[in-house]
Image 1: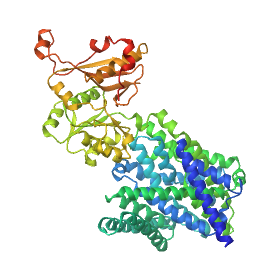
Image 2 (image 1 turned 90 degrees about the vertical axis):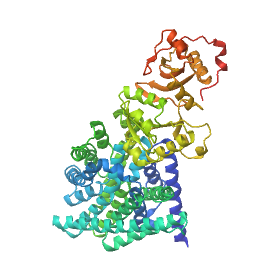
Image 3 (image 1 turned 90 degrees about the horizontal axis):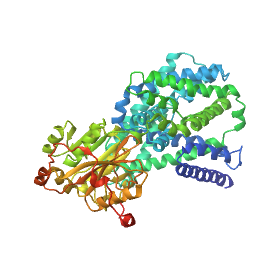
Image 4 (image 1 turned 60 degrees about the vertical axis):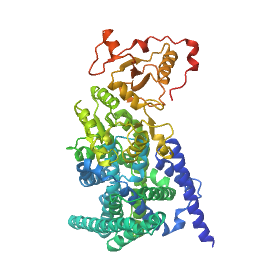
Amino acid sequence: MEASFEITLQMVIAVIAGISAQVIAEYLKLPSIVFLLLFGILLGSDGMNVLHPQVLGAGLEVIVALSTAVILFEGGLNLELRELGKVSGSLRNLVTVGTLITLLGGSMAAHWLGEFPWAIAFLYASLVVVTGPTVISPLLRTIKVDRQVGTLLEGEAVLIDPVGAILAVVVLDTVLNGETDPWMAISGLTLRLGIGGSIGAAGGWCLAFMFKRAHFISDELKNLVVLAGLWGLFTLAQLSRSESGLMATVVAGVVLGSASLPEERLLRRFKGQLTILGVSVLFILLAADLSIASIFALGWGSLFTVLVLMFVVRPLNIGVCTINSDLNWRQKLFLSWVAPRGIVSASVASLFSIFLTERGINGGDSIKALVFLTIIMTVACQGLTAGWVANWLQISSTQATGVVIVGCNPLSLLIARLFQERGEAVSMIDTDPVACQQAQAQSLKVFSSSALDTTVLEEAGLASMGTFLAMTNNGEVNYVLAQRAVEEFQPPRVLAVFPRNPQASTSTNRNRIDRAFGSDIPIKTWNEYINSDRVKLGTTTLSEAGFALQQAHLQALIWAGELVPLLLEREDRLLVVPATEQWQPGDRLIYLLHDPRPNLLKRLSGATPAKRLALEKLPEVEEISLPSQSVSTIPPLA
């Protein structure tokens, strides 16, 4: 009874510590693995000595195996195949040629700098060829790099994990059995990948079929059926060929994720929560079992080994694998910088340490210590600085330019022209053939289709655009379209013209969608103004002197329905004005001003109707006649 309670206590401590680390990381916007490693070490034998993973015995290996299966399955489930197609060449190279480069480079560094025997050096290198979705995915959610780089990093992390794990097993077999025939090693690797991939593909198809056809099973129970099926596929692959189970889980996740399942979000959410729990418990347990003295005993040579892996081998890997890609030097430099190791390296290293010790081969503890040193250094150095490096290299998704506009009405055509004249990419979508022809007449890229179709949004280039703007005449439709854009592509800026309280406002995505221009802008009215030539296109720069008065004057015009703010130029970037935007001194505002004068009066006054609105400074806005004492009575913009 005491033994069972001790195991229970150890698991409870691990779960509480792991989830606490996740909460702190979420609050501080830092990679969770940093706090998981820290908490694990503090609770272990070299810290507070309250967590003893060895009490679990063989159960630790079971937890590692089943949790890793869920983690890799969730990674495969979240892979976007259409995005992988854009970087398929580079991704293929990273998983194949890149693995070989890291294996050779890491082993040479470990042998020559760390003074490890060649066999142990190759075993270490095989353990660190992987990056891992457990570190990459949370990192990408935090720093928001551009979609192409993010897809390549996540695809590499998910696909290279099983390859690296199987490669490590092949190298371990060579070390334990003294097998030096390279063809035997290659055939063993290929056989495991083939068996695991075949079982995973067949099992993933069966799970997708069940998910679609078994209507008598509730959605919550379907999630558990998928979990049972996942572990069943993992075990079947392991029985067929040792260490082929990881490949089976990844392929099953990819097949299931590409099957367009009903209620797929529930499945992703369930597996995501299991992954967070598994990662939290595993890292806490493995870190608690780590001896800090063993890391310090490695010496300076091992430190230099990791530095070479980070600053020589990784850049060489990226340079070779992306040589024929369309990635620019900024993207390649970021890919070279970010390659933190994760749970697969830690868990497999811990298991290998046990195997080597049991066989009486020296180096097991040293390999485990060196792998954890690699994890600590890559996470601390690369993970903590990735956001700063992305901003410095200007590859953050928030810095993306270009716009996708839904609705080819006069107002949207005007906004599209302003973006186009700025040199930014513009795509327009509408279901009305006549409206599409009008847009095409202005040399705009137009898609005559529904914006609810994700294929159309992809063809319009939303994956790489900085702004999505829905401004059809139907506000409720605009909000739904904006929701779809957030769910499928997550562009940095999503705006729509919609009522103050749309029915869809209870969505969890409401905080990602901004109301465009202002609150309750009558878009139909302004389209009529443009068609009847009753508007002027103006620009003004908000100055430091008299900023409050100038802003109040503009807001008074907006409140009176005489002016609608369209675009805001700030720090050389052109942005669609959100209703809740806080203007700043130095901002350049582009707006439409209602000009109620009849056309006859305009002609008599010498004005000639222009075919295209010209951007100008308008005295009606520039010459402020508003009394200063009335500033406080002006209603807010939104």
